[in-house]
Image (cartoon, rainbow, N blue to C red; front, side, top):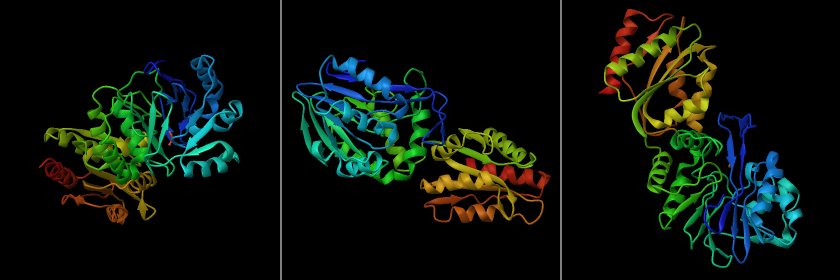
Length: 384
Ligand code: FEO
């Protein structure tokens, strides 16, 4: 696949992966993108996951059309992109390896070799001329690993963006970009909003025609849409006015309250209402929706003097990604000594700029008439 006359796609689609990065369900698989720049000098950008190296080398050889690579540019050392570095270095002994100083330390740790006799260390603002094409390197520490660099090709205005602007999903499946890019961003990069903001400031100074990420499609139209979403996500602003109700339920009583609240919210005119069962639905999707919407209702049971385990996991996912700037409400259930609200509030103690709803709902086993009034009050408060 030609991206431009000089830049070719040599990545692969992975439909075998069970859990991406060991935890994310990817129903539509995953793409590991890699590119080839053909100029006076020939540069390969990144490799692919270790299960697909044979296919990647085949793609590379076909695209090379008999030429040999002069450079392998390593933007990111996570193994979904770096697994082929040692094999590449062995196959093309004349090629130089181009990466940040930190990336070479990681190569030593991953491969036992930091390619000292053939490496080119690059940092912020360094350039590499390939002939008509010139790459300028932009450091992006902690987006989402410390060694990450991006590169900008001036003549064709291409940004090789590493994991930034990536998404779940293989390239041979049609699906909405924002949905799986958001789940990818919040899950994998979400903790590092400040670092993404710093990167966006640098990117604002570049004239970009195409974004070439390490996952997902190449972005080439309406780039302000994608950059705008990244700005929203990395600044922790809600993307949509709406409510996510995240619940756990042992025997269905807390679930009943959650679903009743969802109906009441819709009747009260809430623009968007999402409901998730934290024990059964995709946890990453629930975390994504918590960051997407402006308001969050946490509904759970008191369990072993704590909260139900899936709720604890969910809140941990939120706080480790710097959940903030939202309105939060609680529904608790307990057949004796309910403490769930107290525990959940305690878990969110360090989260910044949270507003707690004044209305609370305390269920003592089954949903009572009084609880229905409490749910109505909460619904009205959340849409007011
Ligand atoms: Fe796609 Fe952070 O590796």
